[in-house]
Length: 384
Image (cartoon, rainbow, N blue to C red; front, side, top):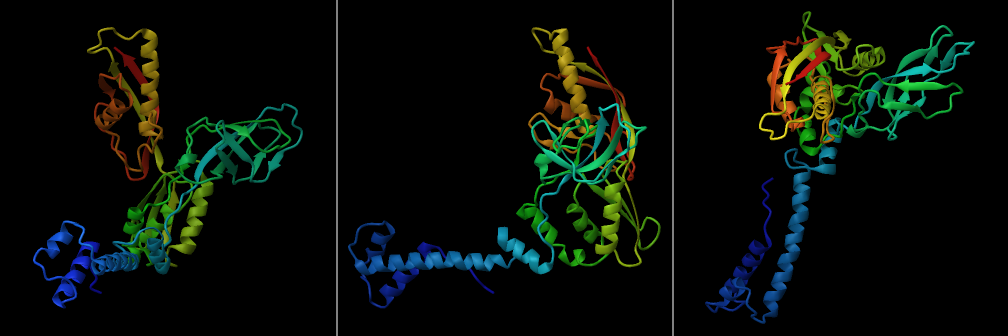
């Protein structure tokens, strides 16, 4: 279809030229210049033409919306979702976050095992709620147990740092203390139009069961993971290795993802293996200078505070966590090398007091394999 939207000026000018050509308006040589200069010519015929041109302009706006609504490159919002609906690929919505929560029994007179069904609500100090998706079992010989929880709401606002879970919302009949020793995983926002458009542009490949694109479309909609890595044909044709960026101890999400991939994505004879990435511990030792160009050097107390901020920022860069501006930083991804220079740039953005940093360990980049993910082990900072 050849379609081109017309402006009010184009419509009005064409109407006047047609009127003049057919003797319905003045042939005076300065008539058109009067109109172009918006001078009062006291002509009701011309005013009617103006109103009609405006109405046509509004009609063109509506026609443009209809025209754009069926074009993947031009459609937006609901129109883009309608295209996706016809293709069977809905817009990826907010995903839930996952976190492993430890329930610590404060009672000392337990005489029977505790076996509570999933669905227990826990929360952070500021009210972000998570719900257990596994039964909570504690034998009389034990004092604690760790279970997987999923956020009640979805989106990036439900991501939490370690040791954020502090409350048991439900009345369980036992005195529990709760905590999470690691940050949450997952919690992503709905795809915007550009992201969704890019996804739909691969719809032919996505609709082919067993294709790499079909795996990716499934995993971007899967709750509770930070990311993933696919290694096709790792052991011959039809074999796929899937690494999910989750807690290595989390078998619940691995089993769920495996079962759903087999039923919804893979071809009947595809062979997939799935696991969490292998943690590769990173030790960091660095010398920090904050006094360069300082007229008044920082006090020891101030330096200790800066040191604490630097350690926290390093942990965020490698593992994940909130930045100073309140945005969530996902840390190193699966198979992403640790590069000291990138960490130095990150610290320079996060810690304005930092003037110079020298890495003693590692002195060069650390290679991270496809099935590994870097995690912080020890951090030693020397303030000079």
